[in-house]
Image (cartoon, rainbow, N blue to C red; front, side, top):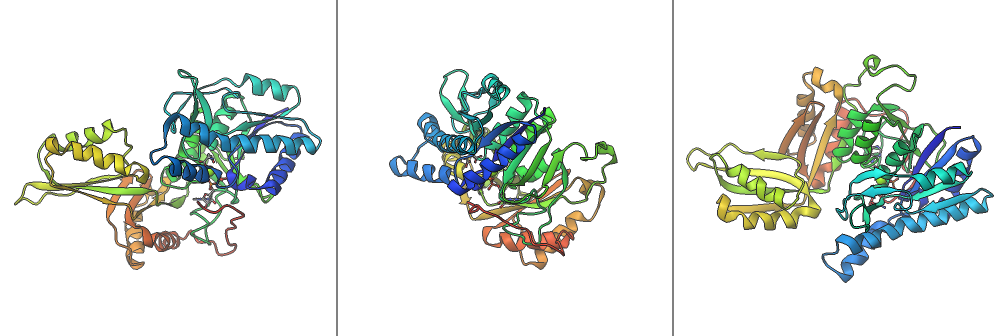
Length: 426
Ligand code: ADP
Ligand code: ASP
Ligand code: MG
């Protein structure tokens, strides 16, 4: 008998009907002879609503109590799903992340999993139950406080449990039919991808394709857990994220698509430090100040200095949520760095083209820039890796930019329209 881990996102369990629909699917997997462990997210936009509520009572809510609050969302869905399964005539037990053995460090709101000890889950399924686990949460090894894994963290819970339980597959059920060549909410002609490598999926996820969280893909790659992303609303086969083709042929034999897809991200802001003295040590001092505030940077660009002034500008992008922290860290460092001024801009979007085949195909960058220029989109920053090109543009042109690039690389589907079954896209 195989063990499968299934994860249902918020849009799949958005209301009582959704929970009953999911219960049916879970029971089917059990009837097919599998041991079944289910990870659930909070219902619909519950997590966002809890965050809004917290900000009404405290402008800087974070840390221990914030995690206590947010984990309540997943506890509601786990208990309701267990009840729905029981009333369909099957045995189910629900568990918090802590009860399921998700041990983390103490970094509230962005804890990392450091161990998984799923003894209670194993016992529960061995006794014939369907085990339901609250996603996105764990318990700190040191403080024993409840922690959360960061937004979208239920994906990571599912893969971590799949690895610890030696599952055959980790199925991620969501509101679209799989991973597409672009976000189906933005590109109606996006195509479903049948199989994608961990590497390409990692780049798409870290460039903003929130259908899978990048940390979850990293985890799956490390433990070689195949992920099957699919819709909980349809019976269609979804996207396999693996190192191998589903037919068992090795990666070597895989015909690499030149381009896997286009991702976009509107969750970042841009900081420009104007008038930095162009001499050794200046950038180091600047980024030391940002690092000490524990801010994760994304793109970094330094302009050529104007020879007459000996001053240069340095721009970088970072999560909008960390903007205030970065600005105050930089203001404190002004005496040391000696720059002129700071500019903060949160009306930006990042558009990325991802594909392992681009490293051997010259001309990809030119086609990408031409597509943006034909769509009248201005490029503000550029960064590249071996299998990705990203640009920053105005947020208002993100839809046009993504659609233009998607068409230019021949990714548009000429048959079906991508279906979005639920969710609000929030
Ligand atoms: P869940 O609630 O199931 O976790 P998410 O909202 O986190 O769902 O992720 C699913 C959403 O991801 C889709 O509704 C879609 O808008 C978005 N998305 C972004 N990029 C892609 C992509 N390349 N393929 C599929 N979906 C994508
Ligand atoms: N409910 C959490 C969130 O909205 C975790 C998740 O859905 O994965 O971020
Ligand atoms: Mg998600």
